[in-house]
Length: 106
Image 1 (cartoon, rainbow, N blue to C red):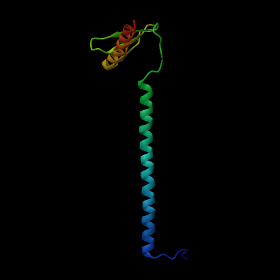
Image 2: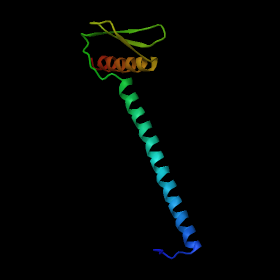
Image 3: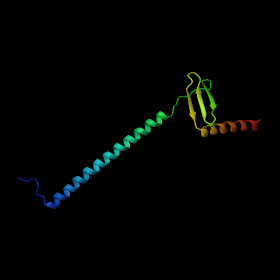
Image 4: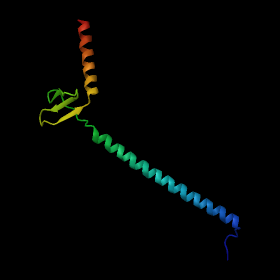
């Protein structure tokens, strides 16, 4: 006893619909998986790359090496961080502008 009396054309349409649904779901799961991996890698790199600790002027020393890179040295343990020369130039320009404006006001 057959529950549904389907023709061959109807069976083919159902088979195509089921296949399409399967591949669409599989594709969406694959995209979600890849997106999740990339997002977690981005989040991990973002927070591992930068240190958000704030030290006062009394706890650190600054220096500039021969390549123009800025070094911030922790006085307590001797660890240091190196920043590119563009960061050093930007900080220097900000400080120079502040001194220039202070001198103009006097």
